[in-house]
Image (tube, rainbow, N blue to C red; front, top):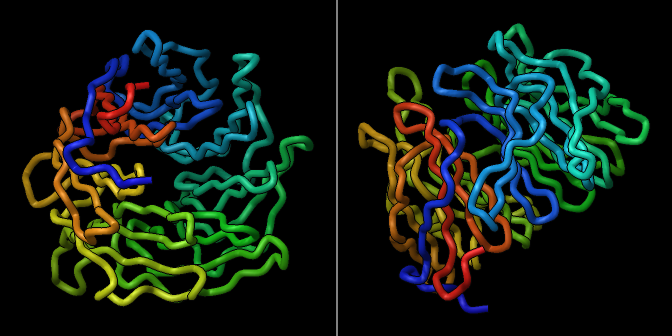
Length: 354
């Protein structure tokens, strides 16, 4: 399939959110996009669950969560949606676990976590949710790995990670769960480890090339992890700096590609939306050295081996949630000084929209 040219990508604004929202969770069930929880303009976590309807270009309010929360970990198990941990109304981590049935349209309480955690990373394997790490109420990172069994409604403890952390990058390839980066007490970690679900053992991999947070992360079908931009932590008295550097780890070779084999982005940025779309890597918005949020967008052309500018977003913002559904890149909410209610979609012009 031919890779689209830069001028074929087009942004369109869709129905705005009922209110400005940040740290909400987006997920897809049956090709439909749902939006869950998040913080409002006053910084309060909310219980809302909304479904976007492309037919009428509108948001439909669904039964709210029993527990208001932001930054929740979400796992889709068939028609059921498992919502784990996050931050509650008192700004503390939560141990509450709830499940929404998209067919019945109702919530059920499920077995709680052993302790309250925020910043959990969650992945699904063989119909079970694997929850990695997190930060406890004491603000310390955890090394816990736990597995949720939907039929039995139980959490089982698996061998813990060698490196405790929260907000880690997780990705499943075959029987291996890769866990990269994350944070400990707000400081970024370089640890990179893999859990083998068959041997139930952990392996340490070559660490991340630098300490950074708020990077874009994409995995390609060939098992390569691409870390894009972010905020690089300064050493000693140095200040942290935005970067446009890219690092690529090849799981087949078990090593990081040489920097000569990667092409840096045009713009230094962090806390942006990133996606693989029609064979191209796309990055949108975020924060850079400008005083306000960015609206700039660029895409990598794999044959030309260069980044090209795309049309800017209609609404500059950082901390937006994003998802790709049916070759459409949806960027929802975020922050531009205050939580944003913007909702826009990037697609290729030749196609019918939604």
